[in-house]
Image (tube, rainbow, N blue to C red; front, side, top):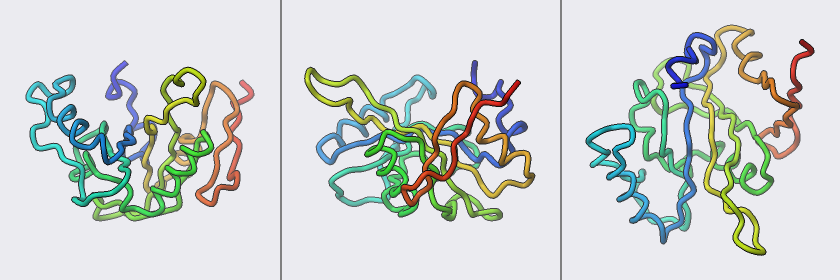
Length: 182
């Protein structure tokens, strides 16, 4: 089911975007950028101007590769979250522990009003090589601004399938979300 059919913006008004942030090593950067530029799965023209930003050589990148909605999120696609300390800390914790994590609050670069936000991030791992550990691919995330209604903040954390420990940015458990008793 496409995201637009889920009415995310109506059901969860504090959600600014849903995304996949890809882990890219320095050695993978050139091939990664070329692959994303040539990808026509979402846009028939591909993304010919895609580049990791801000510019600069780093040993690793955590890049916003997929983003929904794109409207209102100018400058986020291709963003290396390494430049956002709260986001990077949450990504590292999620990668290193395999746990879902909530970032510390930070300012959204694309917002003029209600800039303070946080990210709920879940790590994504690929198959393990023989005798090895699963490969970290990146994380799926929901970026939310300060909720405008109490219900929207509560609804964001309702996970119906099972209890889910959520760690705060400090690395200590912040909450455990359990399925409703219905």
